[in-house]
Amino acid sequence: MKLPLYNLKGESTGTTDASDAVFSVEASPDLLHQALVYYQSNQRQGSSNTLTRAKVSGGGRKPFAQKGTGRARQGSTRSPLQRHGGVVFGPHPRSYRQRMPKRMRRKAILGALSGKAAAERIFVVDGLEGIEPKTKTMVELLGVLGIKGSALVVMHDEQTEVARATRNIPRTKALRAELLNMLDLMRYDALVMTVGAVRQAETLWTDIARIKPKADREAAA
Image (tube, rainbow, N blue to C red; front, side, top):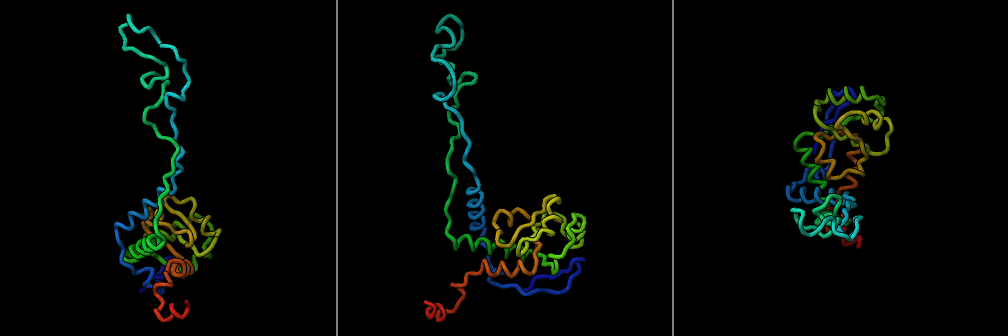
């Protein structure tokens, strides 16, 4: 398939070839949702903790007499009914980690990239590596590209100039192609990529074992 190609002035300079195996894959909404939940769950620390009545401070004596006060009877200051008492069903440290097959994770990434391409929300900028490391320059580029919402700037390697030009812009993030994930792909509306990032994404997310001819796979085995 073809992806639109722009220069640093935001002018269209033609198109660039992109692999159909990465940018033209049928997306499954259920799979995208499952992959997003998987990624978010594995980011949770699970360190929330509350104290039960066995762990809060307090004495064993009754806070007041059993009878004669007109109040409901209480047996301990550590009761959940008392101020500074224990928590009944509060959270405790636990693991939220989930497992998801690698092929499913790969297919979800391909589906998200293909969805961006189908919606014409991928902008390939030639020469983005040489952008001036100023916020104003990146804001102007996003403006001429017609990006009014959030944007994810994808680079093929560590580029300080692009990172500096992006870091102070609200709802805009820069990262390397090898760090693409479902959360960022679903959170940001537009995808601004370098030509090198497109090639790296094709290398990283293409399942070579599945697209090779059967004869080649048997010969390699």
